[in-house]
Image (cartoon, rainbow, N blue to C red; front, side, top):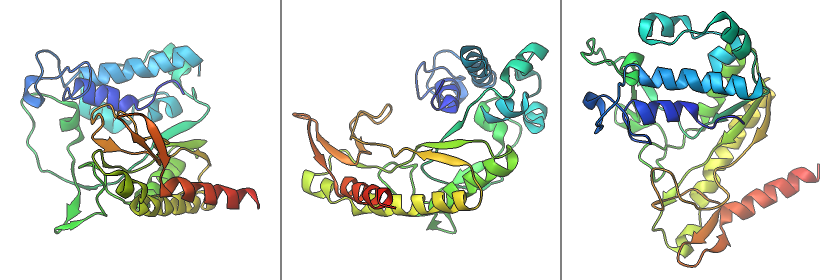
Length: 267
């Protein structure tokens, strides 16, 4: 895998400056330098070229060799261009697509005016919400952005199948978190995580049964760990880690996975 979460690097590092290197237009974040209207596209463009250069081999360009027409129309001259040689290098330059899928949101038309300062997320001209008519889209995990929405995975995989010629796909990250300060007894009894994985794996199987070319799955994560933005305040692991001494304790979800895999290996 050449890059993990390239959109996160480009958007959160250069549009609102939440992640390193913390660049953005002052309108969209607490940054001292940056341009939210151009830098996310330049960074994403160079990530695509770096990927193609490294292995000679983001989704639309590496499948079709160019950015989507709507993206070209909206971003205009701010969008970097591929040369003819770069298009040849980029198109078809993958062995498989890795998809990180945790949750889903409702999308809506925000009816926003043309912004005075361009920004990557403003170019979407789309809003997203965790609830509709006051009803959450699904049960909430610990992170504010993470809701249990298994059907979102099915829709995602079928969209990729139908839009991009059914490429080989590996679900490279999928999971939910609990608070970092959850006690050991409560942390080990993580039935909420088991329910999450049951739902998502069922939708993964449904997509595969309906023709999606999914060949692998990775749960996030084996261990509770230091999350990039959340630090130790969020636990995604199926194994509980006592950060004071680094002792490890398998959670109920770990034993659930073991039973699931043992059962599958016997068939």
